[in-house]
Amino acid sequence: MDSEVISIRVKGGTADRLKKLGINGSEKAREYLEDLAWKAEAKKTLNELELLIKKHSKPSKPGFALKFIREDRYATH
Image (cartoon, rainbow, N blue to C red; front, side):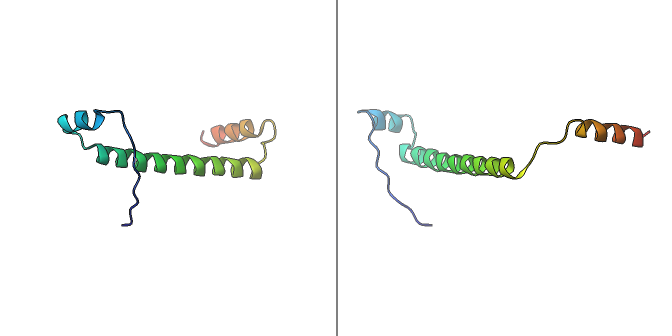
């Protein structure tokens, strides 16, 4: 797996506080950034899909759903 380096600065003492609490700051930052990237990609994809749906769909005629609901209701009895 390829990797890249991202350096961040935090307020003084933060790294020491995390270490004393047994928290691996580097690991937590990596997990957060990977999750953030995944969520951002998913959101972008969903937005693109929504645009495609809007572009290629048209509204139903008035009464369309009602007609099929009634047909289905009467067909099952």
